[in-house]
Length: 252
Image (tube, rainbow, N blue to C red; front, side, top):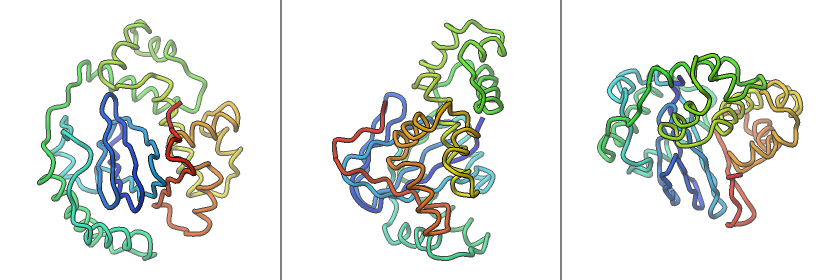
């Protein structure tokens, strides 16, 4: 299973974050933290622009261990604006960051999280089965796999696995697969010179049209827009979530 956390700082506008049955609205200068394997989606409510930083739990091992098998009672937490503005400048404006300084600053933000949010035990059943499911998905998401394929590999009935997803993950199997593919696609867009078409095929999408739709539903911009941002900023850490209409939804 993934060990990546996702830290979101809303620079402007209004953004909805959806995880399972929970929905929270971010206002300007608010901060949110998404835990590993906490499948989520964004919906742009008002010309939202956000800094999104994905970092491994290995970078903050003490924090990661303390949160093992836990989940926050909410995503949005209170962190001083000056701290987050400096965090933004550090990631975006500076080309080189001293590793220990960066790690210490990240712990400062996570300390604010711990003061603001209550940790609760994850209500997850069949954890061993979920491990096997996600391990299979992480190895085969670029292939044309179905829930039947996963069920066969794990030795379970597909209908039962569907119920496990509904009870423990909160979204359907296809959305999970797409989240893996889109994450990989974003990495390729940010770090390689591959074309959008090449990225779509490499990430497991059958065609560019479905890739564009899924990517926009997740991030609020097209793959080409993100690639253009990367060419302009050369940072790989900024995600500008923008939409011309407050009624646009990123959900299919």
